[in-house]
Image (cartoon, rainbow, N blue to C red; front, side, top):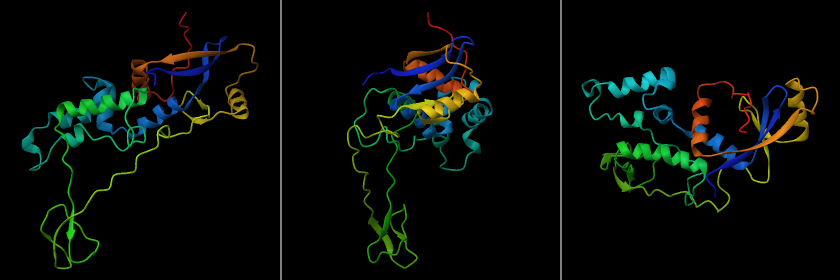
Length: 239
């Protein structure tokens, strides 16, 4: 799959204003996938010095600069500074491909792997005599029912997602994205309602413009989304 994503913009050429975007599944999956990013990952990727992350950047730097002498014994900063990215239908159960949402997620994960060792799988144990509902992450712990918990539990991985079925939203549907990131299925009624709400009186000055966004542009868009309530509406022609 391509490393560019396409979308169509409805532009009021008279006021040079982008009214809304018409997008396919991949763009919507990209936007939804941003919600699984931990705050520590977001702050780390925003800028090298975390200045554009505001108060959260200051909080991140506070943890980073705090001396180990102030931490509880056996406490590691890594879960705060390089938190693990949550489960995502974009990356679980199928072989990764070079789609933009995956590339951005892989960027975050590769940054994490540079500074941390591979995470160790946590083992859990129960007693072998009876199933009482208790477990422990320390082998040999005495169960409340009186038995030692030495039987390791087996982790069952989720079933593989069928090829072509990954992501969050269905294909064969077009979605409308407003400047304040309201995402809805595209319909004639919804688009007319939005044009009316925006004060558009006629369609003579409206023009559909197709654009392609590469990885760096989507990454820049992500940064801006975290700092703004609305995406910049002003349309600047690439010509």
